[in-house]
Length: 184
Image (cartoon, rainbow, N blue to C red; front, side, top):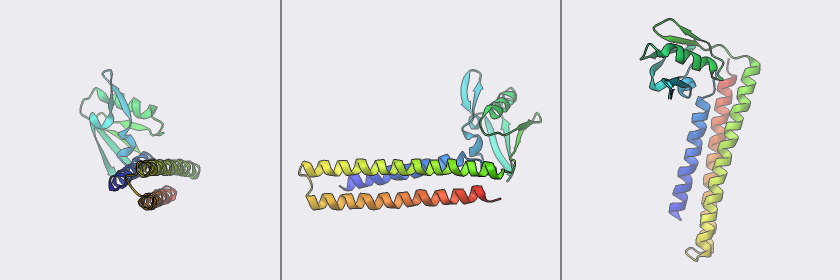
């Protein structure tokens, strides 16, 4: 029973971690290296993430600088950023690629809030799926007479408490991200 609960809690924690990773991809008007983490560059025929072929830094809250280790990669990185769905315009001065993060319009902020809410909902669904799996495991134990009916009910109550806690965490993180996006 303890094993089932530990496994469920671990998987629920992974759902929240995944939510945080998804939030990192959202552009909030503040510069973050996670904005360019998932951009893939076709580097000599090999799909390569930007962070594996350059150093990415944030000199101030409104810009990102990318310094490729290979001079031949400048054009490739620039093209990959332009082709990404982030809507960013890189500027190449021959030494570094600068990306200025523009202020978000009210309309764009509302779109981002919708995306953030979708991510929160996906995390909640993942947590509920873990709950379902854990409850099924507990019911199997009860059917095979490994645990009593009372222990089964108690285990399911524990799983429900875990689920409620992690759904609340997802909501909390979602509200914080929404506030961050809507802040001017």
